[in-house]
Length: 485
Image 1: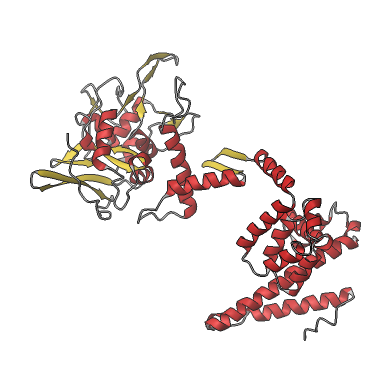
Image 2: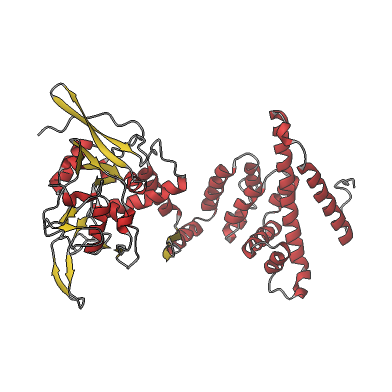
């Protein structure tokens, strides 16, 4: 079939259907063209042509939606509204049909120059959607559209010249100038609409909500600052990095001690774990296996014993041939049957996650009797003292994972969980890691060992990260001398 010219406007339903079928067939033929073999000038011409067709189809839809709604033929079908009827014919969301109806009505009643420009292909659908969203809400704005110098003709002209991002800013500015009172009212309503939902689902937490422009910018700026420049080996997507940054910001707020300063118990992440599970995790984390001893010097094994973590001396990490080693692998067989630790609401967590949370947390002993009564509640005790943590930070200065330079306030101290059986806690057995790499080290079961070199009278140390198969990860940071006493 040969397409006819604009002069032969179809008048009957049969003619309209025939012309639509011809357009559809022609598009199908064009879709099979050898686009991959085109050079750049030809490719540019194709993109321009497709954009013109797209604009024509958008103009056709607006004209059809406006005309069919006004014709009211759909009313005898039993559908409660035009948008529901349109959605039923197209199998699209009702919200999409409502948006098309709203746009077509605006073009028909308030924006005739815009409709003509879209039909002629001078502007695109994205520009039209910006106009129909921002410039017809109030009577003052609709009156301004008729202004010969700064009305609809001006906005249509700018739509043909500006990218949609710049055009959106211009239209928003125009709307504020046309009706300042409505702009202030919209700002107040925007604040009232803000909401955030945190819903616990089977395998995690569903987070969604809506923020106004100002508060959205605040959150975006905070997440950008927290994300920083990704490490060379950070293969997360931008969305994954934003998720990590959100947790990062919340952790920094809680760790900073600024929340509820006068409260007897400040906000924190609470984990409950029984002594048997803790003993099993300690045993499973000890390289080489073998008999263990509990904090009282008595033999113990995975799944047995009742170590008194907070009521006794906290003990330190391992040495292999005189060098400090923080093991990463765990003997999972020793953890079989051990009850998992849980969050404050009772949600169980994996043993590996518990090991990570134990690294730089505080332990608080609570002893229950057989009827569930509390027999003893010990004092909260950190695994590293404040002075030891400061010493580790002064020594390492930033995250020690290869290629990462995150500052101390973005991380925590990682150490061996089997401090239980190996002597006193020492700064030699702790390493500063950012929150992301601390989690990564535990998830990937990386082993960390300390390499020592001499430069004259000084000992220069750096950390070596090794995967479970023995492969060294990245180049270590340059060694630094220990801080002066």
